Length: 75
Image (cartoon, rainbow, N blue to C red; front, side):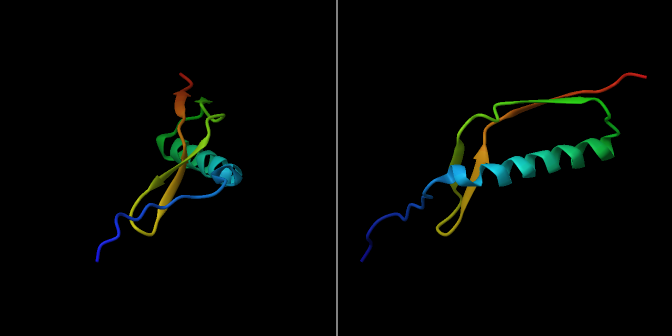
């Protein structure tokens, strides 16, 4: 007997906003270091809602859709 597809959801995904923002900040720092970038970073879209995407039958991914721009300092 098949009942249909399983769809996962998450109540109040915005409660994870702080954790997602911390992950974004950490990722930026970890990316700048090996590239030797010491310039400024501009992040747009952090005010966007926390989105939920189903990965498989048991997992979801949370994310904020944002754009990142890095202005490298010139010597």
